[in-house]
Each structure stands twice: as C-alpha cells, then as structure tokens.
Length: 148
Image: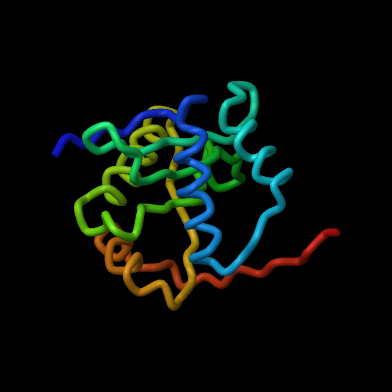
C-alpha cells in the first residue's frame, strides 16, 4: 500500500465530490450544487484562503481535508483551522486520517502557526479516538449565530 498526500487538483473533481457527499451525509447536512461548486473552485484558487489535500492510496483517492489560515490576537503568525476531514468509510483504520492531519500540521508549521485546531461532534466516537491521540479536546464550546 502506497499512501500519498497531495494538494487537490482539477482532475480529482469527480472522486472529491463523492468524498464530499459522504462527508455531508455523515454530518446529516446538504449543500446545494452551487455551494459545492463554490467550495470546489475555492480549493483550486491560489488566491483564496482555503486549501485542500487528498489522500491517494495506490492511485485511488480515499480521503480529503480542507483547511485555512486565520489571523489571531493570540498568535503572531496565526493559527490553522482544519475544517473538513473525511476518509472513505470502507477504507478507515489504515492511517489515512492521521496522514491527512499530519500533512495539515506540517503546512501550519511551515507558516509558523501556533496551532492547528478542529471541531467534531461529541458523538463522533470513531474519529475522536484518532483525535485524542494528538491531544485531548479543549473543553471549549462553540457557539454559532447564523447570519442569513
């Protein structure tokens, strides 16, 4: 098994869409086709602060992540939000999620960020087993005010 983590590119679109749909399904949410297309285009835009990596195992994409960099009053060089992470459910437990997280951490270190952080549902026990190997959850609660 050869695992490669690399930036997402235009030729990944169809498989990325399948992984993205799996991610949205897991979180019981839906995006319009337009909103998904905006996300895809932002991932490919070098001038937009959204980045995507994919995990390729023996030539097949089986995972993806998105992340962005944020300014912070708490850090001279900002921090990195690992926003989305998904591995094909049939291929989990083989190190793909860890490799994707490690690649984001590497990118953040190269930029001098003070931390990488992410959110997950409290009920996401499978992913939390992996996440807890990095650091225990922060104990913070996230509040969301929708702006429509």
